[in-house]
Image (cartoon, one colour):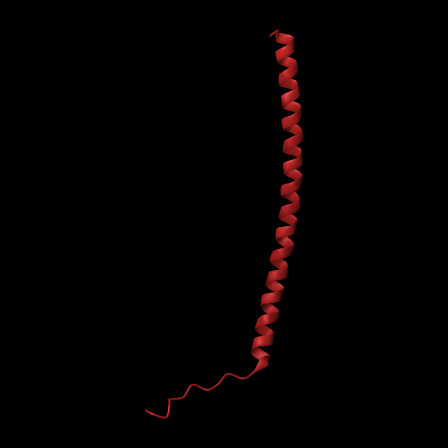
Length: 68
């Protein structure tokens, strides 16, 4: 195999790797944005749940059972 052929194959491999890295970087950025949105949504739902839980019904008073 000649040096020119080896260099050409290395350049092709490098180009494919660079393309793959760019695709993966873009996908990671999209997943990071999605994760941020999901965390905000989860936080909002947790807060809403706690508000609903507090307003749903008063807590029963803790008393001793009648057999004491």
